[in-house]
Amino acid sequence: MNAKSLYQEVILDHNRKPRNYGSLNNANHHAIGHNPLCGDRLDVSLSLEDGHIDNIAFQGESCAICKASASMMTAAVKGKSRGDAEILIHEFRDMATGKLDLDNPHHLGRLTVFSGIQELPTRVKCAILPWHTLHAALNSVTSASTEAESDPIHLSAGNG
Ligand code: ZN
Image 1 (cartoon, rainbow, N blue to C red):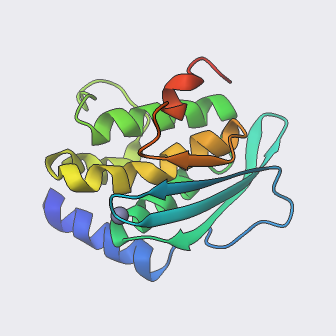
Image 2: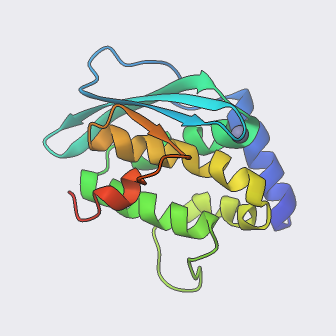
């Protein structure tokens, strides 16, 4: 299977069966993300216990790319430490914007299906929004926007 059809298959699969979709009763961190360019709106809630993401869920109205990215993100960071989640956030963001050399060691695993997104500039923000929102939730910023003046990912580099 080539990279493009694998990408399409993954997007379809996660839209048909989004992982961790819904809200959490015992969430202690929460953020809402908004991508005005596409109209994506995401609500990410998680329970952070002893520095680990014990549980995480998302819901909202978004395009297929954003939804698939959110679904894969929740599966990828569930059970991880906050520090490991922050590493994934940075790596995913760098991959989506074409700044990550995938030949070097990284932790993205199957998330590399999104590596082709860098060739679709209008969709990059759709793919990144869930990760922006996760970052905001981890740092208890209540809302994130891909259009924010101050990028929350830059604001709190070094956290965790
Ligand atoms: Zn979108």
